[in-house]
Length: 413
Image 1 (cartoon, helix red, strand yellow):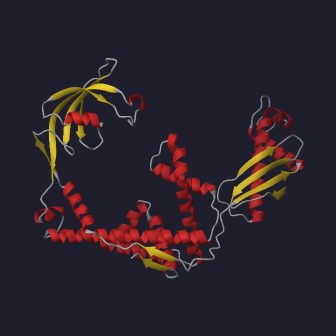
Image 2 (cartoon, helix red, strand yellow):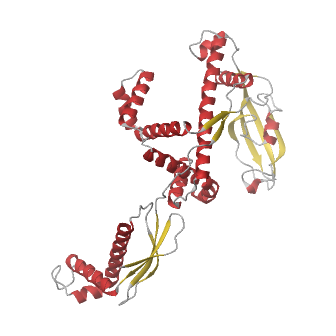
Image 3 (spheres, helix red, strand yellow):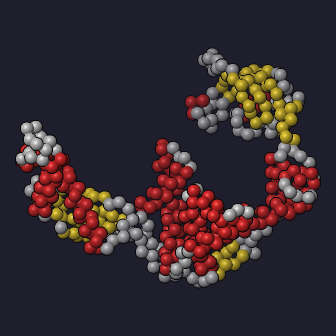
C-alpha cells in the first residue's frame, strides 16, 4: 500500500491511500474463500461449490467485504507507521474501486492535540471581593419566610400573588364555544394571559363575568395571536399567602436556631461560603482562559460534538432544536474541551493526577462529615458511578493549586 499525506490543518490528517490491483485481487479471493465455506449452494455440499459460482452469486457482497478489509488494513498500517494518536473514528472519502484497477481513497482522521503549554506562569488574575450586603441577607431570609408561608382562604377580590380556582370557557368569533374547564391559577405567575387575569381580579368568590378578551401578539400559539374571544370566568375560591412573623419562633421553625440573630448569622455564613466558591471558580476560569490564549491549540471537532450532545441530552433539547442549540453552544463546548485538555496535560506533565491515597483521604473526610463508615461512603459513590467524578475533582484541585502558586491573584478593590 502507498500512503501520501495531504495538506493537514490542526488536528486533521488527510492521507491518500493507494492499494495495488494485485493486493485487491488477493483480498477478493480471500473474501470469496470465506464465503465458500459458509454458504450453501443448491446441488453442492456446504463449502464445496466452485469458486466461480460463488463469485457470480455473491460478487457484490464479496467486493464489499474485500473493500472493508482493505480499508481496515490501511487504517491500522497508517496508525502504526505514523504513530498517530487517534481522537475519533476515521472516515473515508473519494473511493475509487474498479475491477482490475488499484483501490484508492482518502483517509480522514482526527488526532489528539499535542499541547506544549510553554507559558503557564506570570499571569495576573483578579478575584471578586466577597462581601454579603444586608440586602442579600434580607432577600435570603424572605425566601425562607416564603417557603414557610401558609395559604389561607379569603373572601376578598383576588390580587397578584393570590392562588385562585376558576372555571373558564371561551367563545370564538365564529361562534364556537369551548367546553368549560376548571383551572388553578397563581395570579401574576404567567399561567394565564393578562386579559384573563384582569377579569379574575374583578370578581369576588362565587361571582361570574363574561367579556371579550384579546389574545396577546406574542402568544406562543401563533394561530391565536391577536384574536378576540369572549371569555366567561367563574371564581370559586381565593387563597392568600401569609408569611410567618420574623421572630425567634420563626428561627426555631426553620432549624436548630435559638434566635433570629442566630439564623441570620448562619444564613450570612452560608452566603459567604457560596460567594467564596463562586469567586474561586471565576479565578480558575480566568486563569485557564489566560493559559489557553497564551498557548493556542486546535481541538478535535468530534470531541466538541460529544460535549454538545451531552449537554443537549442533559437539557432534554428536542431534536428539532438541536441544530440551533449546537450553534449557540459551540463556543462554550470548545472552551470546555480546551479546559479539560489543559488540565489533563498539566496533571500528567507535573505528576498531579489524584492518587488512591488522595481518594481514600477525601472519602474518609466525607464519611466524618456524614457520621458514616468510609466503606459505606465508598460503596455508595461506586454504586452511583461518582468515583471517577470525585477523582477528577481531586486532580483539578491539585492542578489549580500548582497553577495558583505560580501566578498572581489580586482581589478587586
